[in-house]
Image (tube, rainbow, N blue to C red; front, side, top):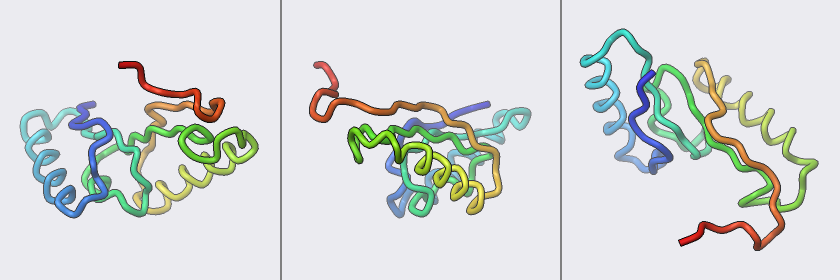
Length: 110
């Protein structure tokens, strides 16, 4: 499977045309493989998802929001997959997953 992006700003209006074009070009170069990109955007806002063959989602429940509330992770994860599938009727891969952190102690080292 080809992936044409990782966590792009696929909620922005130009993303629909961009991904339609890039994915069509990728399929023209290699029609033997499915094409995707990895999103971290909410299913209702993502403008590139209609053009992929497989939806790949990165999720960090109880990390960037609802910190420390592990009890909501199963509900959020289930709702996420149900909403993506109900909206697009495509296979879904959880491409990254992380959960829980001590509030204020997760960061990116420079």
